[in-house]
Length: 268
Image 1 (cartoon, rainbow, N blue to C red):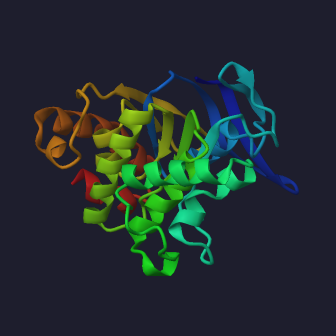
Image 2: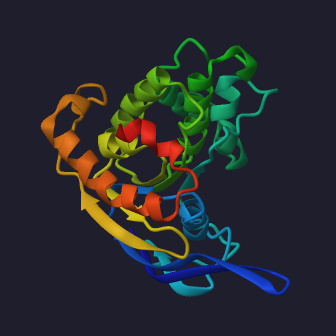
């Protein structure tokens, strides 16, 4: 579904330059859930922006569904969930979730039916007429996720979508995201600083080096689905994967120490 071939990204400002991504090649299959972790500044979010066509690589090619990604042209049926939710404060939950469908000129009755089914999927039935200021952080993020899902993306890019939430809310959203993914089977690429989150949700976890980044580890998480995000953390397999990932990432943080605190809590 997604193929990155020898991707490099260099940012230039006058006479100076900074290479965030040094050389990254990666293939992601249809329906896979892949998480990307690595030190701050290693280009995790930049990779998502490249896949989405927001920016151009300095070298290499990216293909989504066998189509070359052209800068400025977002691949068809691709959704992007940012770190900060993009819900509109003057619209209700129902109106926010159906916004993209209105732009697509879907008939009103179909919008109503689709939004209703999505709200049920994310346990937001009963909150249709609430405005964002009346919602918790987790409910706002669920609404933002449904805004993205409403347009039936086959590829879903998640940029630290749960980073600002408390642990309990975060794990509850892990459970809901996992169930949505199991039902809809999108290809998901998620950037995160949370190793627990990456292992609990993903089929594979990619560890990037500090800039200029390269892949240090591509580890398959061989824990059967469905997974309960609470109980999976108690299994021996979970601990084995967590230690293996931290064994690589911890050494990289020793080499590039900025931001170590962001991930120590999940690995302790």
